[in-house]
Amino acid sequence: MSNTTSGQGTLPPASAIDKLKKDEVDTWFDYPIRVQPHHTDYAGLVWHGTYLTWMEEARVECLRSFGVDYADLVALGCDLPVVELCIRYHKSLQLGNMALVKTRMLEVTGVRINWDYKIVSLDNQELCVTAQVSLVALDRERGKIMRQLPATFQEVIAKIAASYK
Image 1 (cartoon, rainbow, N blue to C red):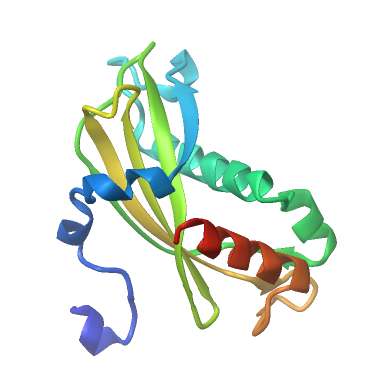
Image 2 (tube, one colour; image 1 turned 90 degrees about the horizontal axis):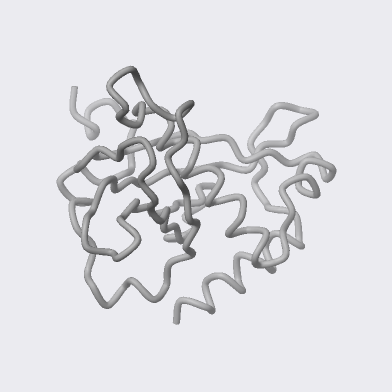
């Protein structure tokens, strides 16, 4: 079933996230990781779901770097669940490897907050994972999508967008 006939899906096909332009690297938030035993399978390779955990950690730390503590959003009654995910695995990381999870807020479209990711070797020479994630702000009490983000979060989104210009 294609995205256009189902009415679902706004992320580009996986082929669109293969490699990002080299001049875009300066706009990324870097989150260093080291592969620990609990991140791997029996072959010593990173289990595929671990990459998602690292991406979420990087996103939370990126927001913190701009002054938003995720716990504060929760206290305001706001959650940011993932509603769409597109991921491409290029090269496996192994036990003991170090890498950078690079993330940036791509855009805010309507109620969606879209993020880009790539996981690369520390020297930026090897691309391991590329991904895009869409989040929505959810009113935790009502369980409904918030049509407007909390004011403090809107200010942070504006700061993040300004930092990319």
